[in-house]
Length: 220
Ligand SMILES: C[S@@+](CC[C@H](N)C(=O)[O-])C[C@H]1O[C@@H](n2cnc3c(N)ncnc32)[C@H](O)[C@@H]1O
Image (cartoon, rainbow, N blue to C red; front, side, top):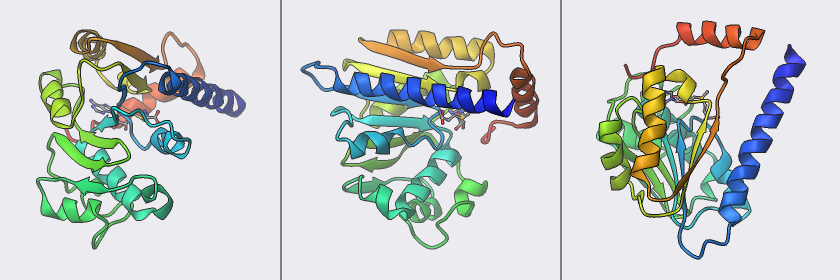
């Protein structure tokens, strides 16, 4: 099973990265943006930044508040990643978190808010002049998502690639369907790039299902 999983991961990375790079390089003649749902600790933004391919309309990453706080802190601590961000602004309703994200005392993997002590709040946590926007939000609450993303600078009239990689499988089926419908109605012109474990009846599926039963949404 190990080899099957490794091949699967390789194919997944190749497919998603090629599709994202193709979108970034399309001759559109107007600003475009990428919205990555449930981005987790994905590093695609940095791969694009190294190659000068960050969309001029912005690269938005959305995830639960504690995940976004921890990701922002990890990025801020790493000189190589920070060097690709340009000027950075951090925002948080909680001063401890702001210090953590800004690379202050206690910053580091597992420290502070990301480890569980956070205030759950929607909104932008980190904005970088190079285009990265780290946004906290919950895909189970679509009624709030549009305002949250608008406040972070997301534009509904711009050509947008919405990326959903191994995210919707964590939502109840009705909510996952609602995310796809919402995307189709919220944006004037968007593509939806999805990679999800579906229609599988393999050992991998059983392994995934056992894992998902064990975990809970981090801010529920
Ligand atoms: C398996 S990880 C995938 C991360 C990334 N897309 C990748 O492919 O590397 C799933 C991510 O979805 C996020 N997620 C799950 N449910 C979510 C929700 N309701 N709202 C926002 N993010 C969610 C999790 O916090 C986690 O970061």
